[in-house]
Image (tube, helix red, strand yellow):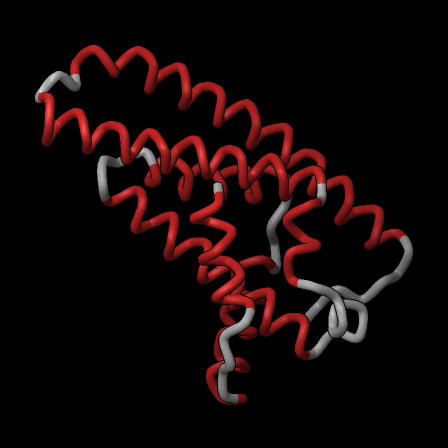
Length: 164
């Protein structure tokens, strides 16, 4: 979890030129234009399942954390609502905590699996615990996506412009 948060913080603190920021903003807006609770869940699930892959999952987690922080940075630059708010605030929302936990669990299992494969060559005994952890991650992300969607729709109902 700490590794993801550090990567997120680095991304959120990265200076980006206006042209690149505008490109990222447009790509992000296109991606989330028609997103709903299921889309949020599937996006987070796809990312977290990749994080279970031995060794590669840690790198994917670092990239995902950095990218998420970078997107927050781009959004915050043009949003008066977020301009003077710490990027870490999004991580202490109920869905943020759930996502960080799920990602941390997946990245940790990735590290443990690569250790077992390289050092001990006894990875087969970790199949069942890994499947159980995948189930836990799925449940957490499903609940988190539901909470996130409820928060988004509440803002929408108040005519708050969250577009970038």
